[in-house]
Length: 346
Length: 247
Image 1 (tube, rainbow over the protein chains, first blue to last red):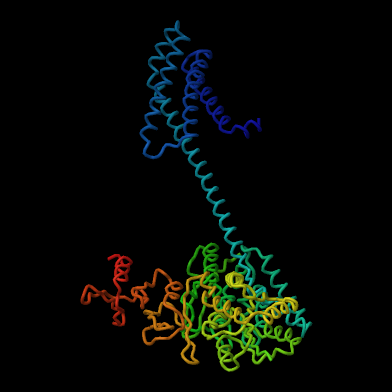
Image 2 (image 1 turned 60 degrees about the vertical axis):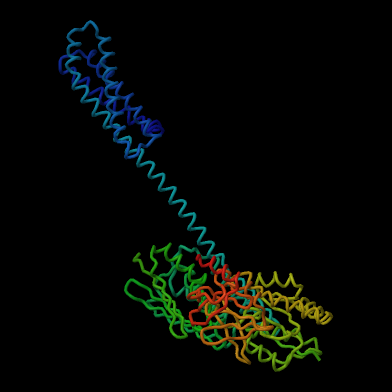
């Protein structure tokens, strides 16, 4: 029984529904003075035909969802079905009890009531089945859409991560190669740093939130490697209070901004370069500012819309559905990116 | 003695070239430079025979630096990753070293250069520079010029027009012009096609700088630029301009 219900839920509900009405009508007719036999036959035939009409309606809506413009058709269909069922019921009952004059008179008199009942039934079934299939289709639609969106998002995120910077990687290896000859201890240390950094980049789940302190620790590896590459030309200054350090940030969100800052800082000027990262805790928000020098006169006009910033913007809008979380500004020779990360209390 | 320079913005990258060169007593490194500006100065001072040149450097790339060198010496390019440059190297058979490179690979490149026909090598390098490989990756967004020892980077959108001038071109910006040893056809080729139009045998104009077109005597026309400069239009130039501007 349980498996039957699970396998054919709609059929089970329908059967129960119509059995209930057969029973109800039988009792009502019996109380009006008809024999059990007559009452049961009348109730079974009446509700049986209505059940067939309802089943047809249900199956129509299962495969065909009329638009709102077709309301009229829906209504007319209901009326036609009602009329047909009543005709059928009258015809069958009149034949079955052809010799029972008293019953035939009752049948004749009760037609308006039967019409009312049939109309209500058909209307009810029409509305419920239409609603049922409509909602089911909407749900299927939604889950399809959700799936597509999730796929897209995953692909996009992994794509962004794939932008491992070959330039950074090979230059770092070249530095290690140089150190291996003259300062093997330092070469070993740099291999360690580079490995830790790459491992950290690879194993992180893009959706994951980590504490800013952890993220900065990861980025410190990157900064240390860059410092070995560029020697005294690169200075970095990272300031982060304890409260800000505890706050959460999506993994690898800062990295492209920092890469950007270093890239434009180092490739846009020939002097020493200072990169500043300042994190501040605000109520419900984490504010991070990254500053690098640049040359307003010669910097390429496309700067600032580079890959790094775009990917961060895209991620922020995917994660927080907001477009105002990353702001960039250029003042004299300083380029500033300001990042705001909303903190959810969980 | 062979005079050499090492131009690379990473100290360790320079040090490894220096280290590998220790086995070549006939090659002496006169200077190490951290960017293209220093490189140009050093080239002018030392007239080197050979340069180990990085491509990605601050301010100007190795290619842009070479554009400003008359008769470039032998070049061995060193680069970590630059797919467009690599294609160009292959095309011109110019040797290059991919970082990190081994001593063996370094020796091979150096031997090849030592044994090469220097004139032929120079020609290949010159062709390479003329077709700045980075242009294939993106439309040129700036032009590097040199006034004496002064290097200037002109963003393309600041250019009003370019005029042919013997073996040179004059690149006009709002307040001055700069000479560069290139042909007008070269710029017609490398500047964004949608923004620049050759309106005359001797003139290439940035379209958005044109404020109006005026008739001159005898069916000829001129274009007036945003700074009031009048540029003569050839007959075909006038027709092309009318078509591009949708007149």
